[in-house]
Length: 590
Image (cartoon, rainbow, N blue to C red; front, side):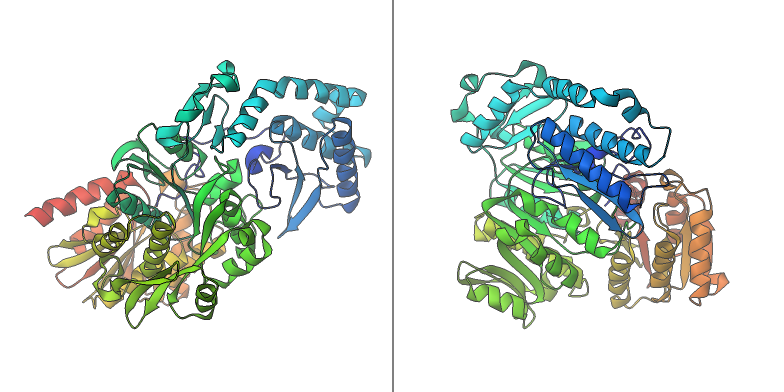
């Protein structure tokens, strides 16, 4: 997958927030602190971590909420890893006003302790309640609320953004400009309906799993709408290119009139910046949790990240299912603490079909998938199914790509939970991955002048280790590796990536620069960190080279390859992947 250049929100980055605070609108919709909409703020200044200021902030929030006749906001101070977040519940249709209330409450609290320079608290002064009440009257639209209530009554999806309101999903959707909303009686409710919807999140495997589910729904006769970090695809055709693993991609799919089943990759960045685009899904999948992107938006450790990924549980329908990786202890522990996760019907996958958690769930009538005696199996509604010998499934690369076994199991569970025809699920598992373009950018396998080439994203240590393990299983004469990283990881994470690479003893490592992904670092800084960590891990200097361009680096490795070599190319963008693939296809045809 592409490295979330826009945090899963679409093709262009959002504007920088004002007032020196993180954008309070990030955690609107389903969020990781409450089961209802909330706003959050990261305080700055000398009183940011002062308990006195926190108590005053909470008092101001409660007081203003009472004056505005809002429900109990339940203000919380979340302190993790040196970052403080101020969070409270807010009415779903008044989140912009709630954002300003949050900033005003903090400025008022810090000002009362002696901090100066706040504009909002000073400008509002004693008239704050009256001003906020006027803003509530402007933001609150009775016709909007009436339409939302009607959507709930008709049991159809409601999606809103700054410009458009939509009811239902896919071929059953109807879209209206916010400025021209119909009365509920004017909506053709008999034609408005939802479509089967799957959310897919996790640290690794999201795109592969999403593509598998889309392929299964297509094989079952549906027009699949897929959004992921590669773009938006309708019926297998490219609709939009770019990073759409977030709310904007979900809206594009759910509002497209051809879509009969929606598969929505849901990345961490989109969840944290904008919440979820929808309130309901039939199935949500969490593939795994890996310590990646830590230190951003209040996510300080893997436990925070697990809670963030599990936001998708909030959207699961009453009779929907949450598919979890039972082998991931942090994920399972986080799910056990989250009411929304425990309320959904569980479905579990694991490497071992007879793992204790899967055995217990099957005994309780739940659905599970995993391997037994070299065969991928699935149990659903009391019936066992065989998905085939693990080594015969193309995505497993003769069993070496064990991580893809989990992706296959998760996708197969989703297919059965959607009530897809069993032959469609089974046939997809048996064929998917045989062609490199079934899953572009994810463990693509190519032959190149006697060498084998693996193209993958492999953007964190776990992902890189998985691909390198596959490479070693191919028994290469030499192992050649391309290595780079985006700049929005800390030094320790970049060093861990290099140490992971060194552990597989490549014969040649070409370090690449990523000029479009510096993320606050200067040119040369990330390659220098990688080289330092490689040398510290015992990699000899003569086995390390540097290229200032990702495509040039990939071509350099291909030019250096010899028959019997395995070349591993973790590629970050389609800008590089497309011309690289064109060269590989050309040689393949020759």
